[in-house]
Length: 432
Image 1: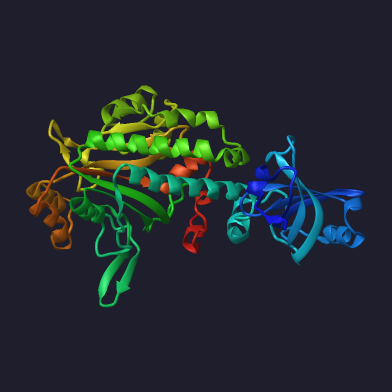
Image 2 (image 1 turned 180 degrees about the vertical axis):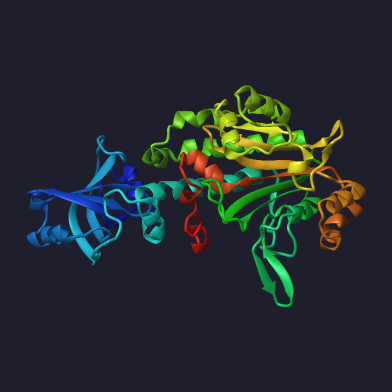
């Protein structure tokens, strides 16, 4: 009996007859020979059909196939050094499942607006295929890393009654007779988990009701937010560095095929897999910008061009440490040696991609945290449960959040965040 295999398994079956279920992405013919470009969800490769090897009926059937037709093929796997995949199949039989008409995404250039309008079909193409495979590897690597580091997965609610970061940029909904909001962050709830289990991480969707006009923001995205009890900021930075270097290393090791489809220069990623990330004080970053002639003063927050300039000075991610308290959220711990700054850090990705991680040591003192909530103009009643964590068994603790799509965008060297999500909701598609 002929084995039914995937394209990705082809290297294991060289010289053997196999069967596959595939879709057609393109074809060309030269008289008595036809070249079919095929995909099956695991990879792309070529099928070669010789007229002499099949009946006239089968050859005519192959000629009638249109883009995205689905069918079974039988044939022998051969090596093909000229192809990007390295293998092809010499077809001896073909069984049609369904043919198509007027597939909207042809093998030509399309604008990004057109492709996003047809995202449900564009996902079948090589570029989004490669991005989603890399995304999947990064998800698996995330679970593997945190399990190895002794974390447990902790799920934060998606519906919340207040803003973790004290902003008003939230999606409001009516929750029966109460106000509720789509989650802006799982962090505060992850702190609950950390004081119960020591080390936890959340991984889920978050929402920001901001009509962003940049390539760096989405209204819906995924966040990974670890929290660690008994952990100070420097120790948290160590975990962050190990995590990002592990992610990059896994992608390099397991996604070379997909990176090549994207045209990604793998050598540009290798330094990030090695670790040794620079830890640059906010003050020094300000001086770096000023020395470059940029109009930037102490106390300003970095914009995308500022982060891009700083990150371009390094061949791997760089931490910017200890921001002014005026530009960061209320829950962070102030630097005992400089109360105008928090013990916090953002990680900037190289090649101009800017911030992908933000984290801090959390304020563990009840009285100090209460005062910071009040100074931020927040309703104390909404944070009584959060203050309970400081009333009962409070310890030093730290955490961070990784914007997953931002990390994918950097690793894949994409121009826009929206390429990094599997299926943008219409609210994302509607962003200017």
